[in-house]
Image 1 (cartoon, rainbow, N blue to C red):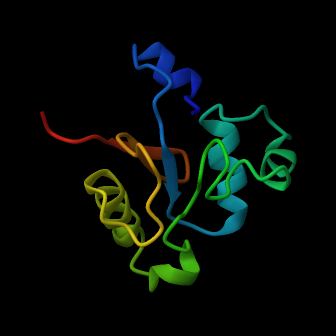
Image 2: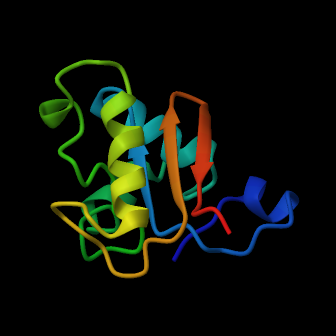
Length: 114
């Protein structure tokens, strides 16, 4: 699984199971690079290699992204993140215990309550 340099700076382990990005595909490139999942200019190769697919190292937008979003600006991505953590998502990933939801250069980390 992947973690960004920011996660390491915050003392988090590399535990992100998936990522939800609440904007267009062009912003997915920016989010991947800005959060350190790949180097600047390498997002297209990261995506083309299948890393963001369901079986990849960092599945992105497992709810369909904007095509499944109904354009309510990120709320469905938060819901999808919660469903992944609960184990109730339609495209459930194994071991989805930590989820990042991002819009542009900002984001939030979802984890189950202890």
